[in-house]
Each structure stands twice: as structure tokens, then as C-alpha cells.
Image (tube, rainbow, N blue to C red; front, side, top):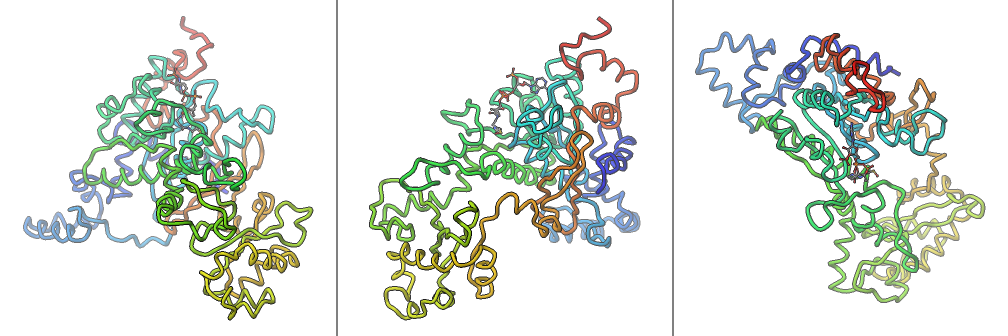
Length: 516
Ligand code: CAO
């Protein structure tokens, strides 16, 4: 596994030569020509050997004809570079050259920037001197070491400490703003404005900057509220529709409010980068956690509207003869789709809390299900033969299927059913997932070395790009790259760095400046 330092060396060399403003631009011009705005593209084209040869020889008319052909090629009036002939995975990474000012903390923002870093972006995490992202110390499992909470959300990033409330610190931040392509933040509403980094100020400093934020709520009555994961699950419609009818609303283990919104934001950022190719300017991107959760719960808003037209017949509540109220009820382990399903016990359920299988009675394989569970007569019995006939009897049907699944362990059920094309899924514990070899083989579960805490498991890139390999690297130590970023990215001289060190801009405020 490549270490962080090693991987950064080549990038750093490229950055060093272009220390101040053109650092990003130079890299982009060479590697991602399609991302340039029209004006830049002409310059970028000149640097590409093939394009250069042609533009030198071609008369003006030919060049114009070529331009219109290019227009046809991509609809944007700008040409794509010739397809790379490098081996798959040998043409760099998808977001090579994109520099991110990562002002994120806790989970939602870091999820987003870690994903972009996995895709190749140079992610510079700005942290408060001496403190850092609060998750470094939250839920600690090893004394004095960065927690798994932090390390699993901040891989492939560099860390610089800057006190934004220090004058010199703000000067450094503004230099970063001028250098980066994307600013990502998930502070409480108004925090960035109070720092002086309003969108207007950032846009003034760098009109190409994409200014991306996670907030709890969008504009409206709650826009000023701080929000954590479960609040978003509650406000976004997930909790009211999760759990059992007879029980209270339930939050889920999947972090759909934090990580889910981080994913939404990542898409917004990449899309804004794409639009910038045409317009040359950045824009604001806002993902509210409530919106993100609702987007993931859209099937429940679907059901809310269906309620006006009658009961939700696929909900087991219907088969049990329990009337529906005015809102979508909690549906336990019902499928939520058009194919009735339920969670069934398997052999060993009495002692193993995860000895269950999720069983879908998909209509096209109903005959196979009947044969498997020893009920071949159900294939023709009018009470069971068709999906509408089965709906009022689902509880009974699943009870009979469960009598069969309880005779086998969950993996046996999985094997047998899949041979018959019956969709089922075992409940996998985190212990089983951590040990799952196929997830290791695809890089979805990765073991990373850390100088302080030793090896730890993390989740790699769940999005597989076949021409953009992902090497998962450990999270940075607090301020590990401060000096490297000051000199190689921002172009500060050694003398200036020495001055910065005494200013309190990159060290904890309680440490008085030596010059004073
Ligand atoms: N230097 C100096 N100050 C810094 C700093 C730096 N490098 N980085 C942050 N700060 C300051 C901020 O300026 C802010 O100060 P002020 O309130 O005085 O302006 C302060 O640190 C803390 O910011 P915060 O209010 O965002 O932090 P919090 O712990 O009180 O709240 C959270 C955390 C998550 C509730 C809030 O940030 C939030 O609602 N974020 C948006 C929604 C979100 O992302 N939630 C998901 C969280 S994951 O479950």
C-alpha cells in the first residue's frame, strides 16, 4: 500500500514549480483539458502536442472548421482531448488537479471531501491549531491517538492548522482561497460569515471558486439551527417511517443524514466543476441534511400520496386488516417496493442475533418458492397463485416460508435460493463484513497503516471508476502538512514561514508569540 508521503511527493514537485496562483491551473491544463473554460482551453490546446502541431500549420479557416466540428463533438463549443492511449488506470485520477480547501468537521462534510480525495482531488483540511476536528478525540479507542471516527472519514487528505481568528491566519486562508478550486464547509449557520469568508468575499477573491456547504436545513424557519445525524433523520421523514407500527419512530444505523448528505454534496461539487468548464465561474452549492434525507425517503412521500386513493396493499398492515391513518405508517421489515418481502429467522436465531435472511417473494419466481418450501399446491391454488391473492395473506405465507428457512443457516438459504433465482439476502453482522474477503478484494474494505494507532480498517471508495484507481491512504495527523502547504502550495518563503510560526496563526492561541 502506498504511503501518504510517497503518494504526495510527485504532486508536491508539480506544485512547487507553480507555487502561487497557477498551481492548480497548470495541472488542470495538462491533465484535464475538458474541464477548462473556453478561453483557457485555447491555451491548454496549445500545450497539447497534437493540437499544437495542427494549430501551427492550419490556416484560420481550417481552424474555424475544426472548432465547429469540436462543437458538434461535445455540445459546449470546446474540444475534448484525443482519447488517452494509456493503459486503463494509467491516465491519472478523475479529479487530478482539483484543489479543495476542506473546512469540514464531524461527519457530513468529511464524507464528501474524503470521497473527492479518493477520486484524486488534493484535499487540504484546515483545522483549528491544537484542537483540530472535534472527532479526533471523540469515541477514542486508543489513548492519545486519533479516533476511528476521525481516521475513517479523513483518509487521503492533508492537514494544515490555521487559526481563522488570527490576522495572519486569515491572510493564509485568503491565499488558500485564491489557490483552490473548491471550498467545502459544514459549520453551523453563519460561522463562516463570522470568520469573514462570506460567499461574496470568496467570490471576489476567486471567482472560479465553488463554495459548497452542508447545513441542517435549507432556507426557512429552521435555517439557523445546528443539526446532527439523527435530527436530520427525524426531520427528513426517515424516522417516522422506520420501525414497527406499534413502536416509536426509529433512527437507522445508516448515516443517511451525514454521509448521505456528504454524497449529495460531492455530486453537487463535481457538477459545478463541470459547469465551470463552460462558464469559467464558480457557484454556491448547498445541501441541506433534511433535503438529503427526504431524497432518500422519496418512496415514502410516494406512499403518502397513494394513501389518498386507498390502503397501501403491499404493507403487511393491509393483510392484517388494520386501517391506515393519515400519514405513511412505519412498515417494519416490509419491502417498500412492489415485491412483498419480510425478514425471516434462520437456523441458530435463538442464540445468534444476526441469524436472519431477508426474503423477497418476487412474483416471477413464485413457483420455485412454492416447490422449495414444500407447497407446490400454492402454484395453482387461487388463494396463493397470483400476487393480488397473496397480499391479504402475506403474514401467513411468510410464516410458512420461515418454517423452511429455520431449518437452514442463512448462508445455506442464500445458496439454495440463488440457485433458483430467488432474491434473498443474509443479515451480515459488522464482524462478518469486516472479514468478508470479496470486500477486501475490491477495495471496499481496506486496511490502512497509521503511525500512531497502527493498522485500522476503513471503507474505501464505494464508487469504482475503471480509469481512476483509488489508493486509500491514512488520515493526516493534526497539522502534519502545515509547512509543506505553506511553502509548496502557497509559496511562502522560509523567512515568511518563520514569521508565521511566531504569529499564533498556526499554533494554539494559548501559546504566546515569542516576538511579543
Ligand atoms: N480557527 C478558528 N476558529 C475556528 C476554526 C479555525 N480553524 N474552525 C472552526 N472555528 C470556529 C468557528 O468559527 C465557530 O466559531 P463561532 O461560532 O465563534 O463563529 C466554531 O469554531 C465552531 O463552529 P460550529 O458552530 O460549526 O461547531 P459546533 O461544534 O458548535 O457545531 C455542528 C457542530 C455540526 C452542530 C454544526 O457545525 C452544524 O450544525 N453544522 C451544519 C450541519 C452539519 O454538518 N451537521 C453534521 C454534523 S455530523 O453529525
